[in-house]
Length: 153
Image (cartoon, rainbow, N blue to C red):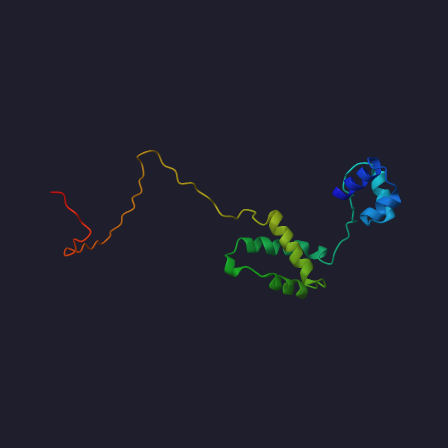
């Protein structure tokens, strides 16, 4: 977005041509022309068509496994490798990284469904609960040494 603003500023305020802007910024002529055609500093939008991946037929199975694992203790949960092996046994031909990318995305968006850490604030009325810190220290005083002590008489 900063580059678009710089190209527009060079063209409008400084009056530079497309060729001069290309030399100064090392951008291609097509890019500079596109930015000048836009006319305002807005980042370009890239639209990618939604294509089904090899994981798409198995998404329901993966989601069920992830929901079941969320409710299990941590040591009993499936790893991504174990889930991948289960999917391969079911006929999945895709890659491991595609599965881990989906698991990571699922955990950030829906991972804590119904399960999570609860925070219960400790609050009580005045005089209802107290906390005391007890300690015990041993103190050794040397009776024979009076070199640093002065007494008033």
